[in-house]
Amino acid sequence: MNFKIKRRRFLSTRTRSFLRWSGHFFSIIGILALSYCCFVRLDTRLYQAYQTWRFARALKGSKPAIGSVEQLHPSPLPALAEADRARVESAGPFR
Image (cartoon, rainbow, N blue to C red; front, side):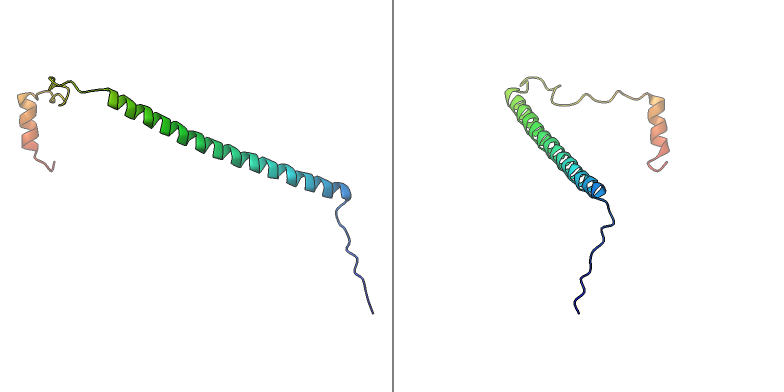
């Protein structure tokens, strides 16, 4: 005996069509979102490379002043008053 089993379609034709088109729609949205992320990443890498190149070019163009020592070394901190200096010394390193 040969029995053929008929599959019953539980979803209407309209519902299946809606699900198929919504699947296509969300696939396109996903591809567009991934494309946008790739574009932003590529843009940031190109921008960073360009700014690094500009900075290196600016450094090559600038020369330090030969006779000025003040520009090479930072200025010292302002001198502490005697009372503050004594308080710091008496406090010790572990206070």
